[in-house]
Amino acid sequence: MKYVKGRMDESILVCVYYGQNGERLIRRGHKLATLLDCPLYVLTVDSKPLDAFDAEKSGYIEQWKQLAEELEIEKIIIKDNEKRPIHKVITEMAIDFNITQIIVGQSAQSRWEEITKGSFLNVLLKEIPFVDFHIVSVKRPSEDELIDIYEKGVRAYLVEENQQYKVAFTCPKFVSLEGIFFKEIGTDFDNGIFKFNYNGKLHEVDITEGFVNHIDIIPKECFLSKE
Image 1 (tube, helix red, strand yellow):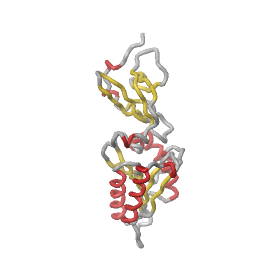
Image 2 (cartoon, rainbow, N blue to C red):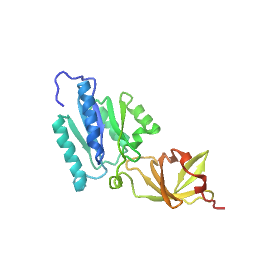
Image 3 (tube, rainbow, N blue to C red):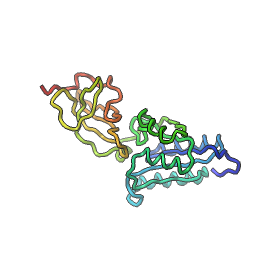
């Protein structure tokens, strides 16, 4: 987006990850940037180096680059081989490019999902209080799209603590629910999903900083006593 008399007091950053929703988020950012007549940047983060990307990932990046050229977007920022927590990367980009508004996608299982959770959002607001956040609803990604969103699943247990359910990684000696925990890539906290079997069906719940978000969706009958 090239401009001459744009609003230099505003600039927008769109955070995207691999999947079909990237284009939708970029176009949403472009629409807002057009209304404000301000620069637009697109950020994607990956723990792998660029030369290790598979054909699918490389294909998405090429699509975004073509879209950026079509829409005349200022810059596609690719932070590859990145080992820092996501909020650190976002904060750095916001400062470097004088970002005032950030757009991220919200879904049940998204690399950027933690942005929409209160605790993580509070961290970002403290680090970059001058930024406004726009949370855009996107469709649930397919199983193939989830491969690189989470680390390899590990055996874990849910135990009750102060009327909440907490994730434990050693088998407790009291009432617990056994399952598999998938931690989100790029977070310092135990954020992710916990999957478990009940009545022959696979269920899952969202985990934020080690605790289940909505305990009411887990039947009490799931918990087994070790006594």
